[in-house]
Image (cartoon, rainbow, N blue to C red; front, side, top):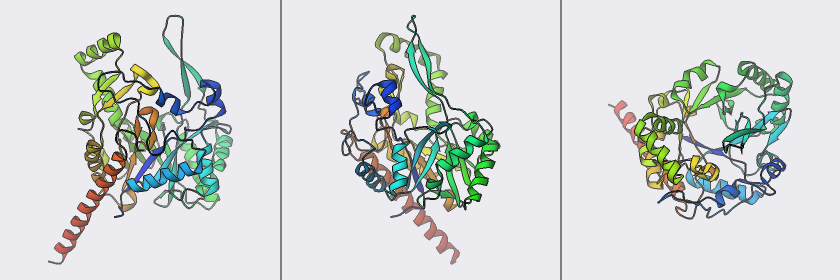
Length: 382
């Protein structure tokens, strides 16, 4: 059963060696390096998370990208939103997999882009043992010339028939919309360049974790907002209760625990009134555990499992069921963020459990929609 609701999954193109990663982290480094060495940090902690069907894959291989699409279609995912890294003056990172998708015209699967417009940092330790940030790659906004170079670097992708459109316009996400300097000028220039090249223009979507930022992002000129408040909810919970903060401090000092909250508790408030707005695109999240990257500084959604994700997915999908057909979109965070424990791909514990859960949720929502349409049509007959 095909759904009018489109589920677009964020896709991390990190799983292949790059010159800068070799320089910064050691020869052959990929996200799998952290994933494979992850350890349990508390009783019942599900780590390490080991991939099953696809193994520790390399995204330079076309057969891996094809198999990912097979699994995504099985889950009911409508397309991938590839993270895109343009820092300035043609300085890109992790661009090989997407460029191969465009060049080879394979896999035959819809896609769009999310510009992850933020600087990259590493941590280092000073003589007092305090973690400091070291700048690896700076995000810069250099104006018209750089905007034009950025546009033309992606024109082949924009002209691809697989590129996802909303209201006839190219769907393009901005990861940090409120940090984007002179977005209004960028938007105007890219829309003009699009029309000069026979395209209708762009449907710009700003991302946010904060419900309170939605109206500000729209006011900046974005067409819509991708809303993912669950991570912000978790951070608020960490900061809110005095006893919780004391407990976290003690656990961290004595046992080096990460911050842990049950997935069941985290999804209790998974829908906000704002998610029903026509210009808000909600987000579903199957799991989260970035201790492979951050160790005891990480956050864990404990006991995230397919059964709970099925319930969560149904709640999120229901928020778009009454929207216009072209706006019945939900983002899935994410398809393959293994280093953040945020993925749909099969692992050794759950297999295809999350894939099956999403497909089941979509089928359930479709059935309810069909029943509602039948009821409305029969009512009109009387």
